[in-house]
Image 1 (spheres, one colour):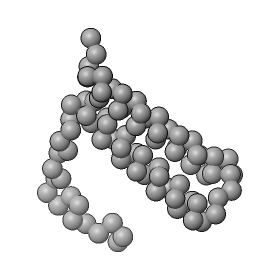
Image 2 (cartoon, rainbow, N blue to C red):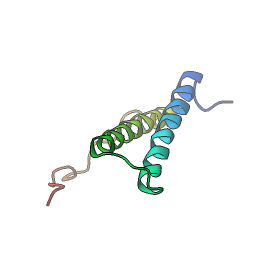
Image 3 (cartoon, rainbow, N blue to C red):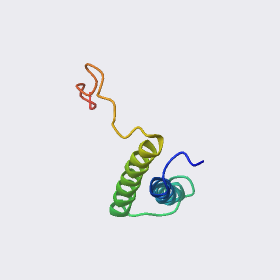
Image 4 (cartoon, one colour):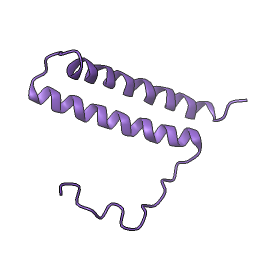
Amino acid sequence: MPFADEATVQAYRQAWEDWRKQLDHLHRVFLEGELARPDQLKGLLNREARAKERYDAARLRLLGLDEPAPPAPGEGDANPFC
Protein backbone atom coordinates (compact mmCIF):
# COMPACT_ATOMS: atom_id res chain seq x y z
CA MET A 1 0.00 0.00 0.00
CA PRO A 2 1.49 3.39 -1.00
CA PHE A 3 2.46 5.75 1.78
CA ALA A 4 0.92 8.77 -0.01
CA ASP A 5 -1.60 9.49 -2.75
CA GLU A 6 -0.47 9.32 -6.38
CA ALA A 7 -0.45 13.11 -6.91
CA THR A 8 1.86 13.62 -3.92
CA VAL A 9 4.16 10.82 -5.06
CA GLN A 10 4.28 12.23 -8.60
CA ALA A 11 5.01 15.76 -7.32
CA TYR A 12 7.83 14.37 -5.16
CA ARG A 13 9.35 12.41 -8.03
CA GLN A 14 9.20 15.44 -10.33
CA ALA A 15 10.73 17.74 -7.71
CA TRP A 16 13.49 15.18 -7.06
CA GLU A 17 14.25 14.84 -10.78
CA ASP A 18 14.28 18.62 -11.30
CA TRP A 19 16.65 19.15 -8.37
CA ARG A 20 18.91 16.31 -9.50
CA LYS A 21 19.23 17.88 -12.96
CA GLN A 22 20.24 21.20 -11.41
CA LEU A 23 22.75 19.45 -9.14
CA ASP A 24 24.22 17.58 -12.09
CA HIS A 25 24.79 20.89 -13.89
CA LEU A 26 26.21 22.49 -10.75
CA HIS A 27 28.62 19.56 -10.35
CA ARG A 28 29.73 19.83 -13.97
CA VAL A 29 30.70 23.45 -13.32
CA PHE A 30 32.26 23.12 -9.85
CA LEU A 31 33.72 19.61 -9.99
CA GLU A 32 34.43 18.96 -13.65
CA GLY A 33 35.49 22.43 -14.79
CA GLU A 34 32.64 23.26 -17.19
CA LEU A 35 32.99 26.95 -17.97
CA ALA A 36 30.28 29.40 -16.98
CA ARG A 37 30.21 33.18 -17.13
CA PRO A 38 29.45 34.95 -13.84
CA ASP A 39 25.86 35.69 -14.89
CA GLN A 40 25.36 32.05 -15.89
CA LEU A 41 26.81 30.89 -12.59
CA LYS A 42 24.47 33.16 -10.65
CA GLY A 43 21.50 31.81 -12.60
CA LEU A 44 22.65 28.23 -12.07
CA LEU A 45 22.97 28.73 -8.31
CA ASN A 46 19.54 30.37 -8.15
CA ARG A 47 17.90 27.57 -10.16
CA GLU A 48 19.49 24.92 -7.94
CA ALA A 49 18.35 26.71 -4.78
CA ARG A 50 14.76 27.04 -6.04
CA ALA A 51 14.71 23.40 -7.17
CA LYS A 52 15.98 22.35 -3.71
CA GLU A 53 13.22 24.38 -2.03
CA ARG A 54 10.59 22.70 -4.22
CA TYR A 55 12.08 19.29 -3.45
CA ASP A 56 12.11 20.00 0.29
CA ALA A 57 8.45 21.08 0.19
CA ALA A 58 7.45 17.99 -1.84
CA ARG A 59 9.39 15.76 0.56
CA LEU A 60 7.59 17.23 3.56
CA ARG A 61 4.22 16.69 1.84
CA LEU A 62 5.19 13.10 1.06
CA LEU A 63 6.06 12.53 4.71
CA GLY A 64 2.92 14.28 5.92
CA LEU A 65 4.91 17.06 7.53
CA ASP A 66 3.61 19.99 5.48
CA GLU A 67 3.60 22.40 8.39
CA PRO A 68 7.13 23.48 9.23
CA ALA A 69 8.01 23.60 12.89
CA PRO A 70 8.21 27.08 14.37
CA PRO A 71 11.76 28.34 14.90
CA ALA A 72 13.32 27.73 18.27
CA PRO A 73 13.60 30.75 20.57
CA GLY A 74 16.41 32.94 19.35
CA GLU A 75 16.75 30.99 16.10
CA GLY A 76 16.69 33.18 13.05
CA ASP A 77 17.45 36.30 15.10
CA ALA A 78 21.20 36.11 14.60
CA ASN A 79 22.85 38.04 11.80
CA PRO A 80 24.27 35.40 9.40
CA PHE A 81 26.88 37.90 8.15
CA CYS A 82 28.70 38.35 11.44
